[in-house]
Length: 224
Ligand SMILES: Nc1ncnc2c1ncn2[C@@H]1O[C@H](COP(=O)(O)OP(=O)(O)OP(=O)(O)O)[C@@H](O)[C@H]1O
Ligand SMILES: Nc1ccn([C@@H]2O[C@H](COP(=O)(O)O)[C@@H](O)[C@H]2O)c(=O)n1
Image (cartoon, rainbow, N blue to C red):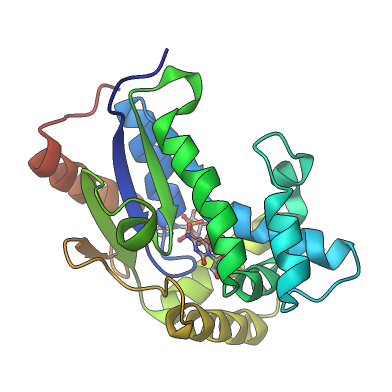
């Protein structure tokens, strides 16, 4: 069974700002379902590469986006975490037909959260601005470029994925620029978003501030 008007918490921000970590924690604490929408764009980018295509080819990217459904095995691949997949994702993400196909996927998730959860937490780049403009609470999680690159480097190495610090920094700069300068659904905080700079905050501090904000907007407190 699904609640009549499921609650939506929108969490946006640039790469490696900590929005995924925060979103999963918020979802667990409030008993909500979580959707990391970056995974969808990574899956589309990787599908195009695997088919021998160019992620900047609009027709190939749109085809891959339309073929993505929640049970597609590519959504669970470790290869999604590589920089190659991230760069391909940010190229397909600039294609309007890709965004339209993934918009349907994301809205279906918010309307029918898996497991009959009473709400959902979506994290990405355009959740508060485009996907869920009426979300109950919106957060924009950010951090300095250097802090984010350091976090991503640590993460890649801990997953056994080889990474060179200067490459990680450059890839992140390129992706930030592509994401914030594209014509459709660019990365930016919604006007009504709570902006949370995590550069000097650990994950517990970020969580506590987010819980306070969500409480002030919805009256909800964590159940776990
Ligand atoms: N406040 C924090 N302090 C230190 N490290 C953090 C913090 N929040 C998250 N991290 C770590 O930083 C890395 C990136 O975090 P996370 O995956 O949550 O970022 P993200 O914004 O979702 O990235 P992406 O959009 O690229 O998926 C992870 O290894 C995570 O454990
Ligand atoms: N709502 C979203 C989410 C992601 N993207 C694009 O996908 C790339 C990968 O996202 P990660 O969150 O996994 O880093 C990202 O650089 C964006 O180009 C998006 O456009 N909208």
